[in-house]
Image (cartoon, rainbow, N blue to C red; front, side, top):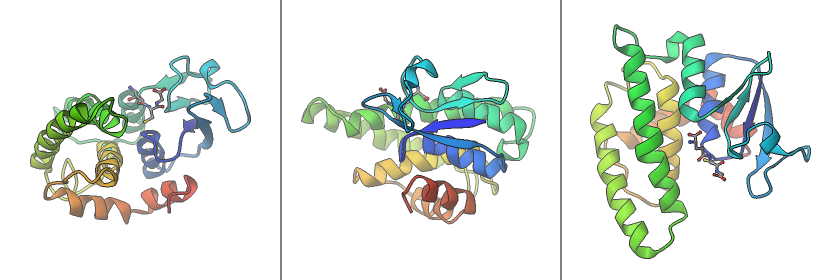
Length: 194
Ligand SMILES: N[C@@H](CCC(=O)N[C@@H](CS)C(=O)NCC(=O)O)C(=O)O
């Protein structure tokens, strides 16, 4: 299995989740501006969308989109997903919220086209961080066990922190807790971030 990633990009979530799952995988870095892999290959031949993450399975199937890749990991490592009758759908609900309502807005805050856009986007991000803060069911999103959604949220909160955006309680302690996890440390080291 091969994970195509860019250091500190959203692909860090998938990188962390693969370590949490204990899977063996290769990492291939992608330079986003040139869309070339570290060995100079054209990344769009792997993922025509041109963005990370992409996960190439051992049979050659290519998975793209954080929601899909994180769901695939959770399906194979059920300890990384919430249990119960609605567990699977709660996971999709949370991944969709993080992907559509946080990730996309944070990208706009990192690369705003105007000061007015940044101010407007940051206001909505603050509301959405408040929503996810209110959903924490324990030390992690779904209780006392970290899972794939926590990996995605952690990466978004790293970005929010780097942007200087306010991160509401209890999320600062969650970030610290995640940062201390061996799987997170391992992924950060591989990406040159720790
Ligand atoms: N919808 C995609 C978005 C992925 C995404 O935004 N990737 C960024 C890095 S965080 C990227 O590679 N951007 C380059 C580009 O869009 O050209 C997903 O959730 O996987």
